[in-house]
Length: 377
Image (cartoon, rainbow, N blue to C red; front, side):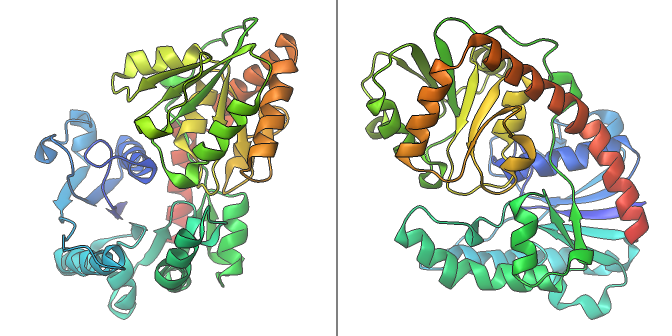
């Protein structure tokens, strides 16, 4: 089987949740001897030509095609404009081989121009937008306007034109249907982790419960609501650990909070994660966050908002799910967790670890994807 995997970059050459998802797709397709034309670009100091993040055996099945993302001066809508230019450059790079593929898998806007040329393409074309965040509730009026006037129309048209639309499930599938994609075109497949990173056991919860926020500062991630909730809590029997590049203006002066800044060393990062009990992910919008998958794989329970596909991962068995990102609900649930018995927290942590090991590992997910692509092709 031969597919074109057209991405907006793969980890670690480009950082982001979609980029890590693309990396794992490529890695595990190659491990299963699927021939891949990988379209990507580089925003890092790594040598992209070496593909050093793949094994020699995996690289036998990967053909790297580098199509750089266009750059321009900043103006309203410049990202959308450059995304379309990028999709045209990708089409030019692939057009001579376009009918040698069994399937074409596109990420985000990368297949925009290709889908406009569907009449000359014999195979099926699939599209994957991370979480359709532009159709989820925005944290402020500025982002709402960006979603309405810049993002929603092209995303809707690209999704409607595709032969297959990939969804993580949960509320994302509901959104895809609402924008006019028939259910028969939707392929649900969650994201996952490598089985090797799953912890063997959970760390028992200590007397002082340890919360974790992991990620960069971004308005839609709900960090402002989280900060206010922490300040409102009177019970001091907790620690809160922040890992990620948080601006100094967003850091609280609070004796129960520890800021670790950005941690790139994987061994140290895993040690810090495993030292905590509950991941807090109070986002306004999401896809299927890698941070939740990785935290659960390390034996943490999760407090998250019910957005995107988080409800595929988080339930009352594996954590606490709140309906929206607001200070009142976040504070109320943090206090509930602080007052929950260690036995109950440990049970949720164990359930979270079991759920990942049984349902969300790439070794299993990739087989479902390959079988699905074969049926579609």
